[in-house]
Image 1 (tube, each protein chain N blue to C red):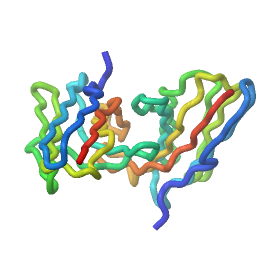
Image 2 (tube, rainbow over the protein chains, first blue to last red; image 1 turned 60 degrees about the vertical axis):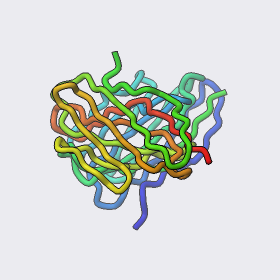
Image 3 (cartoon, helix red, strand yellow; image 1 turned 45 degrees about the vertical axis):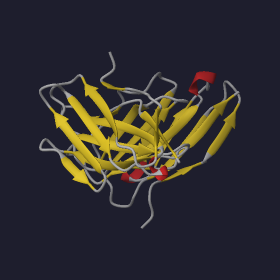
Length: 115
Length: 111
């Protein structure tokens, strides 16, 4: 079956522009996560969606970052007024549930470069 | 202090060597533990879960010491294809599947 897909795979933008990143989780997975990985760094948790529950936004670095998950499936991460420090790989993951032991399956990521 | 700490390496080892990575975590209430593998410019993929009694998967052995808040990964008979970054991952206590990733340990296996 299809894995987690993300688009675009690469995005180059100018400082101050808005960008929208998309994630399609594995069909049937109720939990969806966004992470950010800067060059040579570990994964930084951004936001978590589980079913119809309110998302955990505790990892979003500023109010320029927001995310939605429509219909319990596709998610978009929006970064407004991008800054150079937003340059990173943005990874989406999904898991079957949220009990704490399910495997998270990652998409290939979107490489964002802010000039 | 980071919630999950790892030696960044790199560990440069010859083929056939045995290599061990260690990881410490700060939250004593953490409940689930994993090793993920990340190849260069690729997404992380689950290598193995880590159980309290220790577990083995082929050449890979994972151990958990809750008292010391310490996780290890042992790779025996290293292959060139084992070259990657190994991420120590801990489930944040609180019930749901919120994973905290270490920054990773880089392994380079050479001929």
